[in-house]
Image (cartoon, rainbow, N blue to C red; front, side, top):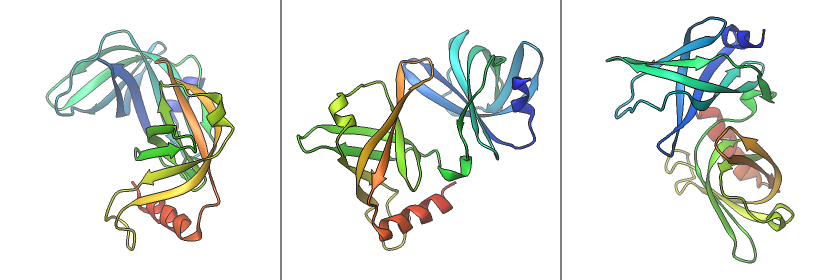
Amino acid sequence: MQQNILRESNVTKIYLIYVDNGARKRMPVKLRFMDNKECYFATPTPNGFKKPKRKSPAELKVYTTDGVYQAQVTLIDSNMSLNEIMYEVSIPSRWDFIQLRSSSRKEVELPVKISFNDGFLIEAKTHDLSLGGISFISDKPFSSIYKKISGILTLELPKNTLINFPDGQMSVETKFVRETPYGNFGETLYSFKFIGVKLEDEEILKNFLLHFD
């Protein structure tokens, strides 16, 4: 059964994603147990945690050595102890296979800007990063004209973390690839590809992705 993805030995990471008071929460969790109707996940209690609304929409994202899976679920309830939070979640009715190789890109939030010749500017934080491009999540649609022409993407890598790259800023030509509805919260996942990346910039990306945890 599809729910057994959660029990597979090649699972490396599981994230529970939900919206609480307008803020998107992405919690790393571990499966504790599951039955035919519900599954229970635990995570250490973060500072300032507030109990989310019961029976709210959520999603599970499961990273395995074979790929990445995503499912829409219901966050039935949560209970907090001194050391951990236990989430009670509905069993996924369907899993979507969203990425062939989880090692090909890394989920990382970095400031990014995409500027166009007419002055239009997209500002976001990356959802993931690879040698070939980036994706980001937004609830702000933009005109289809910017999906047909190239722009200049400026990526802010962490400063002073890479040798000979102290300012952390890299610019490259980019072009829209695709958009995909993301979750239950009216958001869209936008993907852009890099065009003509310089060899030195490609090496910087390789080094960053290699050492990013």
